Image 1 (cartoon, one colour):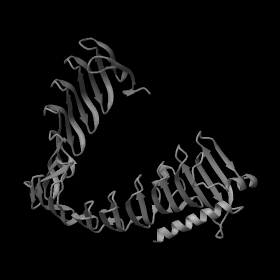
Image 2 (cartoon, helix red, strand yellow; image 1 turned 90 degrees about the vertical axis):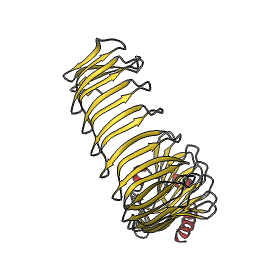
Image 3 (cartoon, helix red, strand yellow; image 1 turned 120 degrees about the horizontal axis):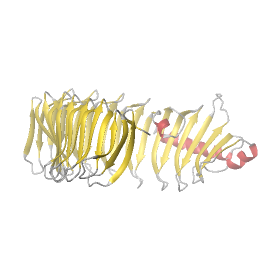
Image 4 (cartoon, one colour; image 1 turned 30 degrees about the vertical axis):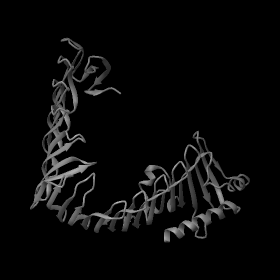
Length: 414
């Protein structure tokens, strides 16, 4: 209600500003060609301030700087426009800082966002918006004009109940926040208003019962968490058969996406620890790797559609460390390189699709020290790199020329 009243006050204020004289002290305009102009002459301002800048305009951005208010502060009104002229963004600014209502619109003219900003850079660039601090209830709509979210803030922190909606207006999800952390129960609903699941949180961590009743795309499951750790879990497939369990923090969890099994995760002591497998919508194993203490460790295999290897990556404490290999679809080796703490170090090889040698390189701490580059089927190099100096001649897998790269001190020359 507070936000609605503020919106009404804002609209009344805009009408007053547009029709009263001597309110605007200057107008800065950027047109669609990037030309900028600052207007401060009283005669031109009197004419321009009669415009309704909340309607389509032939500009890219307009900044209206008002005269000092009763507190000696300088308000500004910023508006930007879509390429078709429709209003895109509106922001209220005070003394160069964002303070007031922010509106955003789709190119169709339909409102997209409505928010209240209490602090941040007084500009509409993406980097400036990253600095904004919100307060009160922020609203979001889709292009059809349906309300899709009500998100509550208190002095920059998510606080209170945030509500998300289905396209038909039914509540989809409610999320309770306290000082930026989820506190309480997230409730999920279908588009008919029926409860379909809950997630229990305490101080931002999963704690208590989490369950989903299942639908045509995701089967039911039930979990119990203790301060973020998964202690118990039972997982079903779409036929209702139990396919995975976690007991005492140990076992396997399954995740479905769009009606098919997408992931299997091994758990130990309540945390993901062990093998993780990813599957395609066609139920084909795409990849598998291992997690130890929250970090990738060991071999990661990525597979072709026929389960033949496509890539092998060696991990050590979340860093690529060891041998990395790739294969062509026909099973022949495509490349092999040595990596040390995410940097190329040691020998690196690549082959053409017919099995002939493409290149042989040697790296030291990420810098190319030596390289020989061959044409398809050839044995003599067409170019070399020695002591970090030279030219790398690159071809694609079928032997067609791609480009030449000059190296100096082991680095490509820009």
